[in-house]
Amino acid sequence: MATFELYRKSTIGSCLTETLDDMVTSGIITPQYAFQVLIQFDKSMTEALESEVKSKVSIKGHLHTYRFCDNVWTFILHNAQFKTEEGQEIFKSCKIVACDSDLLTQ
Image (cartoon, rainbow, N blue to C red; front, side):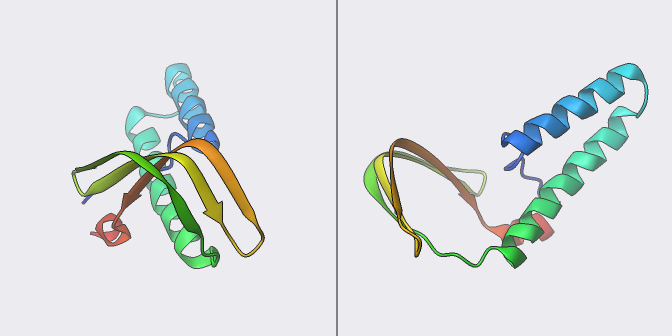
């Protein structure tokens, strides 16, 4: 089974990882159980984004760097302009990580 750690560097992912580490250190849960929780977290985030997010976004910017490794694309954009139905935002620098969500269910 392919496992991606896409959401673990988000705020909620970092907090979950820190809490699980504390619980393992305290002996409340086993490391194996903490690992299973993180795997389920990744799956749940993927499912929620697939079923709940209906917005579309248009992105323009200067492509500084791109990379493809292990079926994951990484793009670094400068002066990135994100347009949605609600408006637009411009960011000095932006990192986009993308993968095929079908790989998560294998």
